[in-house]
Length: 196
Image 1 (cartoon, one colour):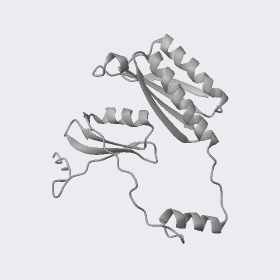
Image 2 (image 1 turned 120 degrees about the horizontal axis):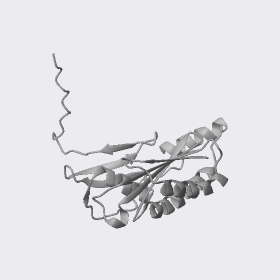
Image 3 (image 1 turned 60 degrees about the horizontal axis):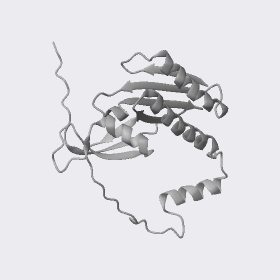
C-alpha cells in the first residue's frame, strides 16, 4: 500500500507525516500494494480548537474510492480517528460479497424485486418519520458532517443563502447538491457576456 500525505494550504511537518505513515501501515495487512491512501491535512480557523485540525482520506482499492474525514485538536488525534474509520470501511469492502454473473432467471427475479413488479410485491409506504433541528452551515461543513455520519446524503440549511439543501454522494465519489426552489423562483444562471 502506498500512503501519500499532503497539506491543503499548509506544509506538513515531518513528525506528522511519519505519524500518518505509521498509522496507515497497519492497513497493509488488509490491502495489497496496488492500493493508495491519499491523506490530506487542513486547518480551519473558524472551527473550535478541539476540531480545527482536519484529516481527509481517500482510499483507492481496486479502482473504488472510499472516503473518510475526521477532525481533532491535533493532526495526530484526527489521524487516530480517521484510521479507525478507514480500517472499518476497508474491512467492509473486502468482506462484501461481489456479485458475479448470475443465471438469467435469477437476474430477472432480482430486477423485478428491485422495480416492485415481482409477484406478491406489496405497496411501498412511509414507515418512519424523523424530525430534527437544522442549523445553518457552509457546504464544506455539511460534507464533513455527512462523512462523519457515514451517510450518502445530508439535509442542511446553506449558510450562504439560508435555503434548504441536500448534499449527496455521487457514484463517481464526488458530491452533488440539490437546492429546492418553490414555484417560479428558479432562474438559470446567466452565461457570461462574450468580450469583443
